[in-house]
Image (tube, rainbow, N blue to C red):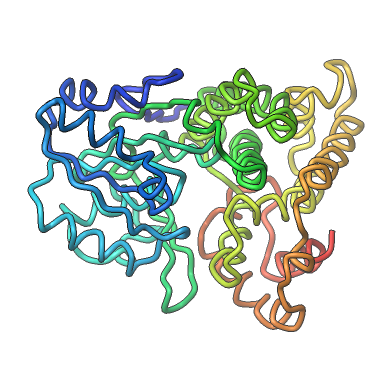
Length: 387
């Protein structure tokens, strides 16, 4: 078996490590960063410490804080224009998945030109853009360690997958202390997103020994600690485990793939503006039940890694417990169904054919243990409506 693995050149992990941005840039021979963040992190003063550290080190930095909660092609164009007004040699994504995903797209377009749509899957772009450095503030997306970004085409309500080594950060600072103030809803949604990354990487048709090791380790960390951080947001040990588990899950799916949950989740986010982690959570139990017959042993391994099934339990029983526990996690973490989220049932039903088409076009369902057709995807959307 042959496979390729790709990682950031430097990963620095630990409490307070985000304050080492200036030395990191110095190590990389960079000194003129554009910091890409969001308004909350700017207005709350969280980005001030980074900017102060950079100025103290004699570096010239500018801040762009007008990212969108779900990056759009228009927001990326606005950021690219802002970058062009300065003389920047790198882009730093500081925030959750949206600022980091935005930073990736900005860095690529700055060098390669064109528009985001020009690079959507199946395009694979490996030629580098500007160097990207990632500082995640949530434990969920794993974007600090992946070769992907997601941008919505607001003219078509399509979430576009952009892939290739061009989007892989050259370095990341993974600081769990940045997650201590995450509210419960964000903690739950990003945590289930990370769990989904690890599970889908492990059951993917593109799984390999390298990605498997990170996926299993991530599942152990996340399943053990997700309920803990939901119950006690200031549990430092659990926060630290969740943060590193999220990074490991990102490494896993970046070197394997995601699958059907993500393929179906993106259209929900694009059309109904459901946060990405939440739309994954809405789908995970239903899609797992559909997919398990295609990789029973692998899903049973997930249950064992998550501590849901005993090491010697049979595959069928382990998978049954896995599906039950995923539903129970959603209930305990108060994950709403699409119906409870307030989506109009008539609008949901009317758009199912287009969502199924967009899910298939992303390519992710093709990596699933059971590859569905459009009718099966629509049936799964209906099943998830109120489950």
